[in-house]
Image (cartoon, rainbow, N blue to C red; front, side, top):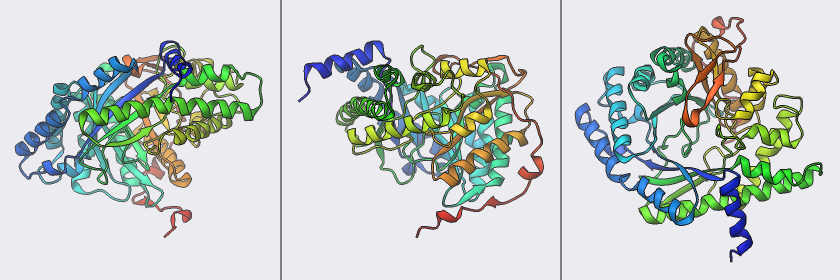
Length: 454
C-alpha cells in the first residue's frame, strides 16, 4: 500500500525538485509500409503514424491531469528509414521527401519530435543507407521535428571508419545548411556506437527491427530530486551517499512505471521499457553538474569528476532496476553541455574541457552531447572526435554517442542559442592538430578481442 508520507514526498519532488516524466515515446514499426513507389510509401507512412499516434498527446495530457505528474514530451520513434525507403528511394532527394512526410505526420498528431531518420551501418553501408546519410543535412534543414541518427560501430562488429569519415562531413554540411539558426540541425543528429533498439530519448531514438509493431517506452528524469536527497547526507560516508542515490532512483523510476502502465492501458499498446536516465534541462536546480558538485567537487571537471559520475551512474541503475523489471534504453546520467546550466558554468569557469568530457563518457550513459565547437572545425577533426568516442563505446561494451554542433561563423568564447529544452552553449575549443591521414584510411577498425563470446 502507498502511505500518505509517500504521496507527500512525491508531491514535493514534483513541485519543488523538478521531477517529471521526460517523455512518453510511442514506437511504431513501419515495416508494413514498405512500397517500391515513393508516393505510395509516403502515403502509407503518413497514414500509419497519424492513425496509431492520434491519441498519444491527449492520453499523455489526461495522465498529467489525473495524477499531477508533468509529462514534458510526447514523441514517436520509428523503424530506421534507411530500411523503409530502400526500395523506393533512388537517391538522397527521395529520402528528403520521406523526411517531409514524417515532419507532417508529427505535426498532425502534435508530438514535438519524431526519431528514426536513421541508418545502422556499424559494419558496412548499403547504397540505400549511404543515400540516407547523405540526405541528412537537407532533411534536417527543411523539417522541424525530425531527428536523425547513425550507428557507426559496435562491440561485435568494430567501427566502420568509412561511415565515420562520411559522418564528419555530414555534421559539417548540416551545420552549414542551418547556419542561420546557429547550426541547430546538428542538435538533431546523433552518431552512435552500440545504439539500443528501444531508446525513448531524442535525438537518438528509433525503433529497432527486433521490436513489436507498436510499443510504449517511457523516459524518466529527476536530477533535482537526486541533488535534494544527497544534500541530506552532506559530509557522510560513501555507503550512506550511495544508499541515498539508490533509494531516490527507485522512487523516481516508480513514478515512470506508473505513467508507463497507464499510457499502455489507455492506448491499448504494449509497454516496452523504462529508461531511468537522469536527463538535465536548462532550468535552475535540474542539473547533473550540481549533483556532482554536491558530492564534493568545487566544479565539474575537477579531479574526482569521473569517479563521482561513475558512482552516480551505477547507483541510479541499481535503484532503477529494483523499481521496474523492464529497464532499457540508455539509463544513467546524461551530460549534455547546452542543456545543463551547471555544465555551462563549468565550461565558462575553465574547469570543464572537451578532453575531460570525453573521459567522463567512459562512465556516463551516453557521450559527447550537445557540445558547441567553432564553425571552422574541419570535417576530418569532427570525424576524429567521433572515432575516439566510438572506440570508448566499442571497447567498454556500452552505448556512446556524439552530438557536436560546429556553429558556423562563431569562435571560442561566443554563445550559441538553441532555445527551449536545448538551451544555449559556449563555443568550446577543439584540438586543432590534424588527423586527416588517419580518418582517410578506408575500411573498419576490427572488433576487440573480448567481443568473441559465442
